[in-house]
Structure formats: C-alpha cells, structure tokens
Length: 474
Image (cartoon, rainbow, N blue to C red; front, side, top):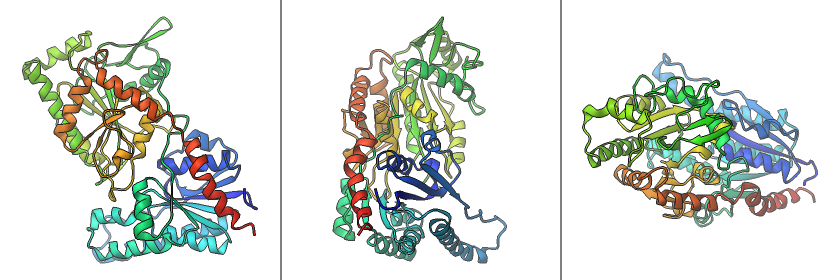
C-alpha cells in the first residue's frame, strides 16, 4: 500500500494511554503491511504486541517541562503561550526530520492545537496525506475548564474546524459524531467503532489465580484503613501460597471461593468529565442498605468480618472496587475513600501494565463507567474493552451511550448514585450462584464483545486509508 510503504501515527499524548492509536498502528502493520512510525510522548508502556512488532517504530518526543510553583504570576500567561509553540516545533522536528517520509499521517484529535496544524504542515512539506481520527472535540474539553463562552474556546473551535476540514480523510467513533461533522463542520467521516483486540477475553481460572497472586499485596493493603478486603488477608496472594482473596488451589486444581467478594472494576482518567463522587456515594448507599435489609448495627463490624473470613456467605456479598488509571484528581478521591469506613465495601486504586489490565477485566464480575463525554458524541473505549472480556457494565447515561450499552442486554444505565446503588443491589443479590440478572448481562456482553478490532478496521478504516494513499500514486 503506497509508494513508500510507510505510515505515521501521531499522538500528542502518552502512547501507553492511547489504546485506539496503538490498535491503529498494529492494524497498519499487520493488515496493510506498512512500516509504522509512532510519534508520541512516553510515560506508560504500550502493549507488548507493539513493542515486539518489527514493523512498528516508536519515537518519543520531549515534553514541555512542568511550570515551577514559584514562578511569578505575571510570567504564567507567557509560559502558557510558549507551550503550544514548543509542542508545534517539536512535532515538526519529528514529523519532518526524525522519521522517514510516510505515505500518510494518521493523527488523533483531540488535542487539536497545535497537533492538526503541525500535521498539516508536515503533510505538505513531505508530500504525504493526512487523516484525522476524531475521538472527541477538543474545544468541548477546553470548555470544561474555561466555559463555553470563553474566547479561547471560540478560537480553539475555529482552529479545530479549519484544519480538520483540510484533512484528506476522517474517521470518527460514533454515528452521532459523524452526523455532527457532516452537518455542522462540513467534514465527511467514516465511523470506525472501537472494538477490542484479541488480547481482551474472559480470563481462565488459572489466569485469574495468577493475576490475584501478583496483585495480592495491593489488594490486602488497605491504604491505612482496615476494611472487609484486608481483614484476614495478610499473606494472601504471595507467590509461595495457594490462596488469594478470590481463589484457592488444592493440589493442581483451582477453585473460586464461594464467599469471595464481588469484583467491580472501573477505569478512570481522574478528570472533570468523570464524576467519581457518584461511585463513592453509591458504595455508601449499598453498604447502608444491605445493613438495613439484614438488620445489622455498627457494633457487629469485627464479628461480621471474622465470619466472612471464616467462609460465611451472605445474601449480599462484599464488594471490592478496583479503580485503575492515572490523573489529576486521584489523590483527592483517595483521601475521600480513606474516610469512608464501610462494612461491606472496599476500594483499591492501582495502575496496571498493558498486559494485566485485560486480565483484570476478564476476572471481574461487573464494570462501572463514569464517562459522560464533554461533547456528548463520543463513546468510552473502556466499555468496549469490558465487553471484549465478557464483562457487563453499569454506565452513566448520556446522549449517545445507547449506541454501545444495550439496557438489560449487556449492561445498565444510571443517572444518579442512588440508581447505581439500586443496580448493585439487584445484580449482586445471591452472589455468586443465584444472581440471574448478572448472568444474563454477562451473556449479552460476551455476544457484544465477539466483534473484534481487526474486522472493524478491515471493513471501515482500511478502504479509506487505501483510497487516501492512492491519491499520491498519480
């Protein structure tokens, strides 16, 4: 494909935290037989499949240094103006000098400034084409902090639209976004739905046991608070032991414990467009409502934990929430978690490798998605990954989420913490054996997750990329 046989994937962000662009790179290498250069920031390790692919070459740019706290206030606006200029020059240096000339640039949007400008210039200077993969609208993310009426937001939207229209092709993530681009931006885009790659799948018993052994120390540590997951768990998950909080090994056979906690996973970027407080409030409500249903009082906490550790099963299980991700508000919410003191609910925050994250999803009982979308037009990729692992999802309701989450088939929607708490009570009653509603959703998630990225990309992205590259072959 193409006279140079080369593509460049551009991400003004951490490539390890940009899964869709990683999958693009893999498909360009595997399905289009191209040499692929990735120009992005470092930080988190991308998936091993990228690192081991001989046709993929990762180029990590230098990042703009953090502004020192002691900097005089009058200099901060000057520094904020310098940052996009620095990023623009760094992008041009890599795209025009450091990498071999490609047939096509594939750039993630957002961020739009200065990425789209730099890629447009680079495509002109190197006689290449460029395609924009629209994940969201950058101006709507900026509006979260500055407000929709800000002049900066207006200027940003103009840049995004002007340079977006200059692209030789466009991909987007939903039909709602495709309609917006066509009707209000004058941009024709092909819909490429996020789909999980092959390494997202339900985990086997052996994979679950090995994962929980690796995570045993993180799970048994309770961030300074004694809780229902750490009680009696000292030493569990050590490599030389055969027992974890969830599994036990007898001889060579692995079993799930009947009194194990229900494992709920949520992945978050800890930013303003995901209200993590909803999940905390729902956890408190679940805890209190179960105590009321079972007529328990606060004095029974230690007794209850001892009974659970000894193997007692209850009508409603303990819940262990594992929250993955990095972001600016993480420490604030970790402090709130430490002050909760719940009987039946525990939280753990952690960052997992690209190889362990799919295993965690494949080992969990339920996923929770708090993504609300700044534009209301994108879909959370984390839900796609969950479905790939056969994991049903409870997600915040917003305008186009039903393109992905089919209510009472593969998941449920909620608009408040109270609704989420009701769903947790309904789904986990009788856990692990007698929760039919949860099993029904799991079957729906498995069916939804049977579609794979490679198939979707072959059908919707490859024809567009082939067509764009062929324009250079005249």
